[in-house]
Length: 123
Image (tube, rainbow, N blue to C red; front, side, top):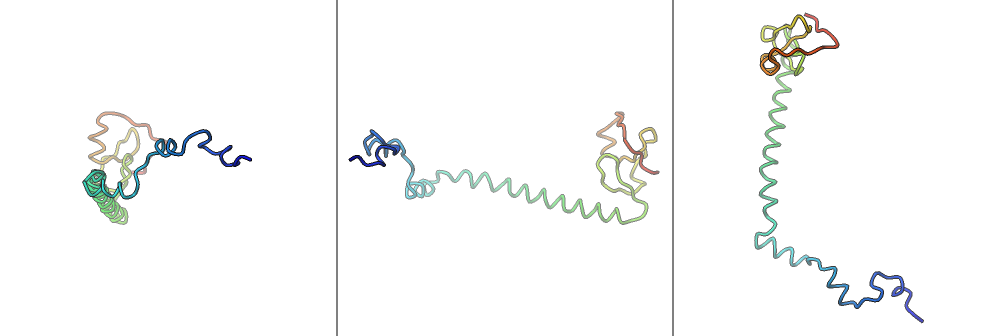
């Protein structure tokens, strides 16, 4: 009578030494030794800088949002029709043909180009 697991198992017809050589994996001890030698630490070094950059980006966005909310709550402010940030109306230019306010940085980026707006902003 044959062992049913041998008949159906992944190692059918193979020597047990052959199977273990085919599936060579690093043992936990060997991984630890690699880390101690400095192999594999480049990921930790790489990930440190992007995380700091991401933290700075999030902080700058938070500050910009706070400033935007502060300006939005004041009278005499309007929203740029391109970037949707609030500015004092004196800092915005109203494009009569398109019917929206535009800030200086968006005006510089857009130049003489025209944008069709679905809805006109009130002046």
